[in-house]
Length: 152
Image (cartoon, rainbow, N blue to C red; front, side):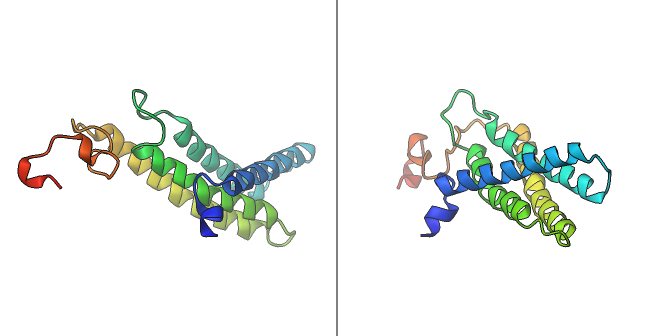
């Protein structure tokens, strides 16, 4: 049952992301109808920026000569699961008196994900290792040459 709700390939995660995006688009349209500037607009803009950064991190092909969803691309895809839940709960939690606390909490949670993604991107660009991608994980461990004493 948990796989249905928290697996990165689950349709529930995609549906929640679409629901959250629909809420964001609705909020943008309503802001254009009444363009008064306040703290909620700023918090919403930050949340939208964080979401776009997380989504763009996943859309970029970090290993163009390899297949999809290997290396850090797996992490970026897994980040979409909590992001989908965060934006959906935030958009559904827009009660008149609770808007600002929901936006603040969403921004704090999304900022943690953005911060970790930034660290991983920094490590990706600093990495000068010649081993193939996923060489030490279960997917690629048997594909690299090992000394005789280390063979499983």
